[in-house]
Image 1 (tube, chains in turn yellow, red):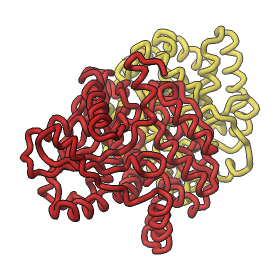
Image 2 (spheres, one colour):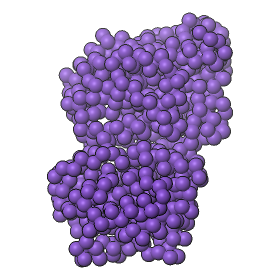
Image 3 (tube, one colour):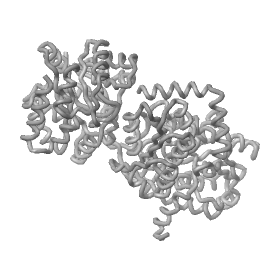
Image 4 (cartoon, one colour):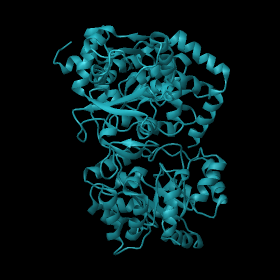
Length: 258
Length: 374
């Protein structure tokens, strides 16, 4: 079982919920990312999602687009992010996921990527432009090591499609709370909870919810029905603030997700 | 994905619907002005001194380019699907104008995404879109050209997928777009095949078309695919030469990759990030090429080459002066290849060049490049 799987088992057994913060690797520098990972851990992150910058991030809103451009300007690449994780693993066992797009992985080579990333201590990946239909090879490679490929389910996904995604996804299932891109305004309604319940019933895999969650209140509302809460753009926005403010914000999210 | 499944189902159902076909055919005839002529360019032929050159006059279609064939088809498709709003990306502005036109005709709302660099060089088309009732949204991120406009249109579509249809303007993007766009554009080749048979009593030796995403070329080539003796040449934008960031010749300077839901040839760096592009023509200034062109190239059915900015500019002036036709800078790339190829062909040979659009939109830019103030 992967580190992510073990973490979720531990959380579910304890009747708790997973707090999954996202930051962009290399924004504004890889050294700062190293520090930020430490801060996220101090503030109670259960799993850390690390964005890998890509030139054309289709699923991302302006906040993460700009963060990616800043990171690319620093020369941050998929290889460098994998090396960063290897470095972090010298001191930390917190599960780490990468989120990037398919072309950098395709270019790196799927088999080589899964091997290098899992050797470095990366626990899984989210690739928003890779649907399960196109993921047969990378899924086969990932099964050789404990490397999770996490797929996304959208609010517009039909029952049949959600079922297919739920069965392919490993580690957890990423439920996208809105039709839209990261950092959009979240509109809470009861359909999110019922979708999450339906998806959870399709496989034994936990469901985490993300896209648009920014306040502790929203995080608490989502935590009431999901197994995990993912917060991205709102943290990326605050990553440049003084550490004290950032820690305060992260702790308030952590408290809300319990 | 659910939206793509919905589109694919609706498209296949409507393809079999005789009434839909009649509706489109009538509009192509009475609204777009089809069939567009196949014109024998006698003075250009005499000047180059080789094979006989025919121009497929897509520049005479309503709105001034081949883009209307696809935009109108997709606008009708969207209306049948019950969508209230159209969005599109545009580079040179031609596809934006065509989509705004289709939206006006069908009574749909319309928003067009356009890179800020392209807005600056194609201000005339920006104003045309606004006159047609569309909102033009500036895309100021990334390379600020066509690729980024597509990204932004896709983000909009993801957000408003229930009410909105995304009118992709070229044979690119996720399935079924390359197929849908090719089918709507294939009217170009069906007409040209009939017309050249009637004019010359034979099929042409060569077809030449410029390639940004590749929709005018696919539209011309498709009806001739089975005619093994008809050679096909696609012309990419060579810009200032084949150096990173200086051109948009994906086959000459790119490699296989996946972008915007398509696996094809891309201009990318060693880490799979997409490179910036340059071309004098906004419509060819794009880092990826339609996947069916990659297929035609691999199978050897079509050949791909490029023309530089300078070569295209010379062909632009040549056609204007010898034939009294001002071509789009995009189409000028295809003409530039004709200038290279035709003198070496026998006089009895026949070449069709797809004149995909007219050059009115480029006049201001050409004047600027020549240092002339209008």
